[in-house]
Image (tube, rainbow, N blue to C red):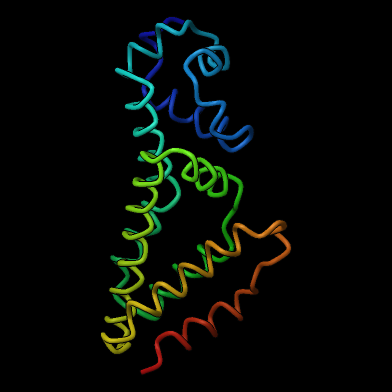
Length: 180
């Protein structure tokens, strides 16, 4: 495969696959080039540096992990449905990639800053839905934070797949959070 036939998305997709499977240590030009069966020069054809690549990996992760979910939540007219759909997806999502990104953030300040920005965006979306749904402005932010922290906390448990709420339990949580 020649370098021009690869796109930045090809590199980013393999990066997320390797990050999920092997952690942030796998995000180096040579091992990724080997996974794509190309030379390392192909990497530098698309990315100026490893730092710019890492920035693109986090942006790609953010879009894939929450971009469409956020857009759908923001576009759903009924705030109760928007929050319930958001929580159903959040509290029942896969954990491997999210855990790998957060582990990476503990050792790389650039990644920590990017993840903090994604966290804040996600919290703001939940906060806005809560306000639209009638939750008092004074409690919407803490409620959104609590929901988010609970979702991330579940993902960071040793066996997150053993700690999944049922759809009915999540819907009950939606009702609880929208109470005035």
